[in-house]
Length: 627
Image (tube, rainbow, N blue to C red; front, top):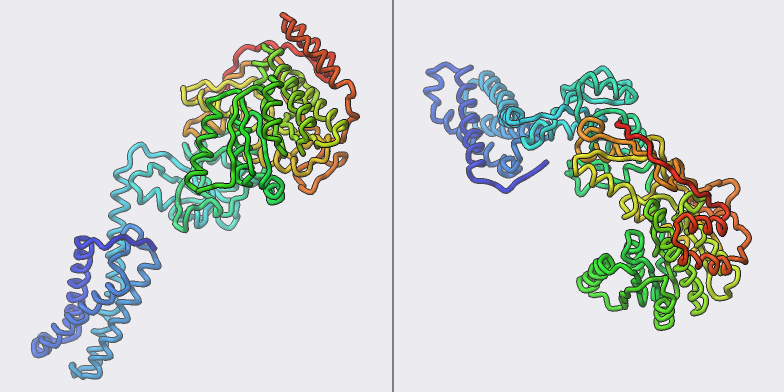
């Protein structure tokens, strides 16, 4: 039940109506069973009794805070509460009058009392319902541009959606029906609306009712169930929103209707990793993050910061984003009065081995998380020498100096594109993995490992920011191929994985995450368009532009649970170790020759000679196709 501050005008109106109705009903009930002469002879007791009952009713209503109830929220509970209070006052009244024996005709008086008690018990709650009815009618009449809406879930959560749409004049949803899988509900009505089903019939139901928006209202909605519903709705020209789940609610009365967010776009449940042991490992240590200003690097910095390392080193070549994360952490240090963390922010390139050595020599980090890299596939196809400079030589510098200065562990952030690479970015990351594996087999001080995962939703290099910009511009949204699929994870998931793998690392491992089923980029684009309140193919076109140079239709993680090594975490596996490439350092020296090459194709050819799994591809765009 919702309350508001007692407003005198609002309270007086209801109080006056209650007193007048109670007094009038009492007097009328006397007229119904007593002759006029008898009433006239007992007029004073009649008037006093009627007045006393009316005032007593008012006092009781004040005590139970009846006048603080929002009229627009009056329901069965509030009505029952008013009925009980009214009837109780009547019972006390008849007992008092019976004891005093004011009226001689007991039979008549009983029926008089019965009429007034029953009538008032229904009339007073009905007045509140009438007020609510007028409010609902006013809200419905005031609505403009109504959105024909279908609610999934004919239950308590669905009732909340309907109530909100009916009573809130700022809510423009016009609910036309419910959809449910419960065979006992299908074909009936709920909240005066028809219940249709099952959910597999959603496309037909949407077309029949000319639905523009679908609201998922299931309080115990699981991520798996949400994915199933979204899959059914993929081809439907509707916007999709949902009620928060119980875990997402901001309070017991949270009735927000929210958009489907990035986590909902994954075709699996969110991965929750326990970082308690990670906290113990990094606490009071010196930790360095390269690429600290990037989307992965900055989240690494945030999560490592929570472990309270003794010194946290932020290292990046790009000053703007690095400055942003530095200011964010400094603000947190100031607001939370943190005194045990030394925050160090340094600008430089991992390709500059003198700069890297200078930092490691001065600060002697215990742990290094190497996230500095070029990750954009098409750009690296046009600038392969720069990809080699940062992704290969940069990794080599950090790995070599980590061994020299006794770093406990170094973790390389790798990618699924390193598996049988068809692009420069993937090939250079595979090269970086071989460097890590080489130093793992030769270093006596440092444990090296690599973490391989798919695309990260919302990161600087992912398709999500691009799609959002295209949607904001009015479209079209461009995809390379309608059949292209990718593995996805969120930034917090990716970083938790990196930290967990740093904990498990013993030397030379390539860690792989069980990322569930891959997501079709076509479906991702459609869901982002619906998230923006528009209809794919109607408000925003989706256009195929063909695979870009070096791009695959399907990415691989090579996750074979039966033949790969399990870790303590059931979501993390280790790729069976390949024999360390003793030629890795010689390969680095060989590949350094690329900086004297002028032709891109010559650089790629040399890279393919070093990384024998790298296949050079030159994809050509296809004619644009609208979807």
